[in-house]
Length: 186
Image 1 (cartoon, helix red, strand yellow):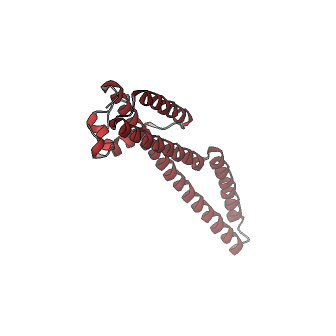
Image 2 (cartoon, one colour):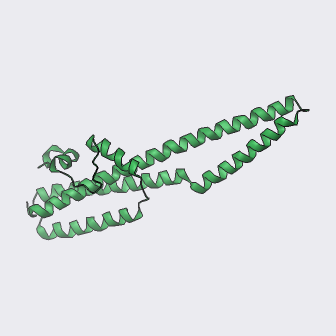
Image 3 (spheres, rainbow, N blue to C red):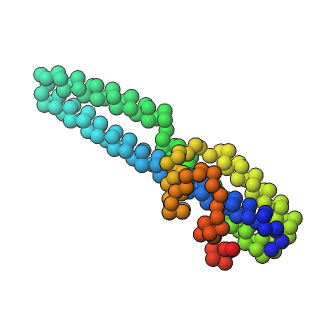
């Protein structure tokens, strides 16, 4: 291997961080899609109430209570739809999915780079590719939407089967090896 042990360790840490960031954004997307699904079901329920009260109003035209209730429910539904549009949860979920895919792409580039290093890539090429990957990592991270602590913990549970109370933890070789093919483990 043409790269010193410390730099190789840093590179493996970056690879693991890409794996983790990919999973965090997947979890954020999942969380937002579940929330969006609940919102859509609430829309269906509210619309059913509007229809029920409109039908009751046509069946009992002398009772103005049904008409008033259907008007208020309709106003509520319009405001609710407006709020949904303003918060654009579905769009935010798509942003997390897009960033997750970018981290997945970068993760694969890191994995290929680790394989190249293990196959004795020249030191000059190692340094230039390492710096390029670091720049790409910074760009993706700067474009990433905010995630939550819940997303962070869910990603930890998915990848490590446990949570770590230290948010700024480093990856052990054993943990990193779980993300790599057997031939690339140390």
